[in-house]
Image (cartoon, rainbow, N blue to C red; front, side, top):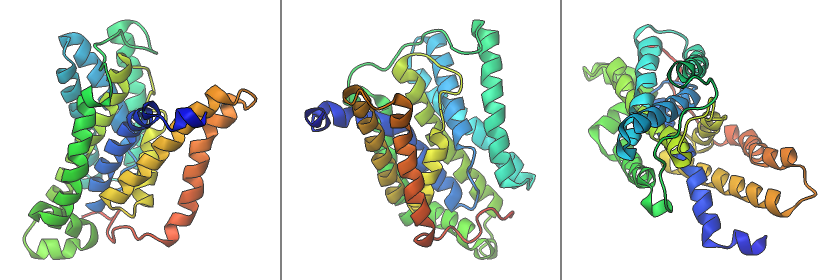
Amino acid sequence: MIDAILSAAFLAQALRITLPYLLAALGGTLCERSGVVDLALEGKLLAGAFLAAVIARATGSIAAGVIGGALGGALIGAMQAALAIAARADQVVVGIGLNLVVSGVTRMLLQVLYGSAANSKPCPPIEGGVLSDPIAWIAALALVAVPLAIARTALGLRLRAAGDRPDALRAAAVSVAWTRAIAVVVGSALAGFGGAELSLKVGSFTSDMSAGRGYIALAAVILGGWRALPAALATAAFGLTKALTIQIELHVVALPTELAELFPYVVALAVLAIAPTRTRPPAAIGKPD
């Protein structure tokens, strides 16, 4: 097992596992830094995975599927912005509600389109290693662009002000609501790319295939102190832990599979138990404009 862990294949596997978490965490960072609680990451991943698979199958194009994934996430982000920002609904309730709606609607659409509430028909899969995966390159670009945008651009300054000092943003005659809405939609599109990785990597969509990844990504955002690079490192640590779990399942036969699969989540919960004393959320997060 040690040889397997030290191999390049293990690192590639860990990176592939990390991609959906990473993109969702970067998107969640944008959303939460603007002052909007992003419990809808699970639904954004699921919507992105669904539209990516449907569009890739309909067009025969992986590129179209990747774009479809971003559109799926952005669509949920637009709904979130309309409810949580424009309508001033409770942001936690909106997030949980969107997750439930996406889960139910994707099952219904699977039945309508493919006659099954569990799986879609096969679509063109992303083949080859990590370097041939377009979503891996999108993630690498986002990993550089998101922290720089938050820290070094005028829009990033407005985004941080919307989350920490919305009164100062209003005093500068800048709309807090529009700033937050832009952050939510762009962040949701990033999460949609993560969803596209889930379905296009295996060449089909399975109901509820996000499987809690959105919540883990949100945990990474919190663990990273609402900063993009630390959140990305947290997702990388979780991806490595998940890849290690797979190796344990393959090599430690005596260990029950159910127990091994709990390992990454136990690690995440243990770290989160320490994180609140070391991080400070944006001052205006969860507060309506």
